[in-house]
Length: 159
Image 1 (cartoon, rainbow, N blue to C red):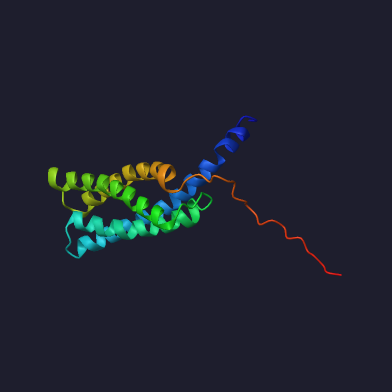
Image 2 (image 1 turned 45 degrees about the vertical axis):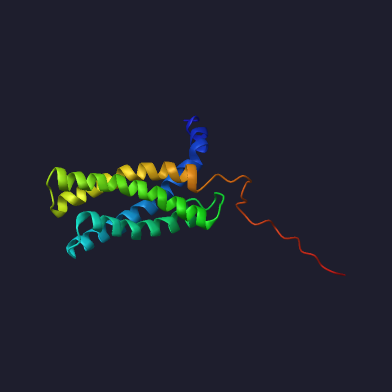
């Protein structure tokens, strides 16, 4: 059992990031699915509904990942990060749209259950791409160690 501790220590940061990424992703997924179903019930088409839902859930996910999941990583500018985040989410959205489009227009399935299953598969495939791409291009490794605690201030007394 002594081999487990070094193994855990080696992957501790990755496990912490994956856990936080998973929590933000799960919340964004609930938001995405809820919005998708809302727009479908309001009479929007499946592709339009997915785009609207993705814009809302992606905005939520950016804030959660920037300020919680990857807060320990270097901040390379809000504009740059936001642009890359949405660009990469656009690619992930395309993955999801391909799955939904295949389900609706190739398989001819248009019921809510089929579209929701297609959405789950598309989100799953997109999530794999997003985690890899965020770490690679959006939330970069810090070039200098970021302190975990504020340094203790020395108390000076003038005499």
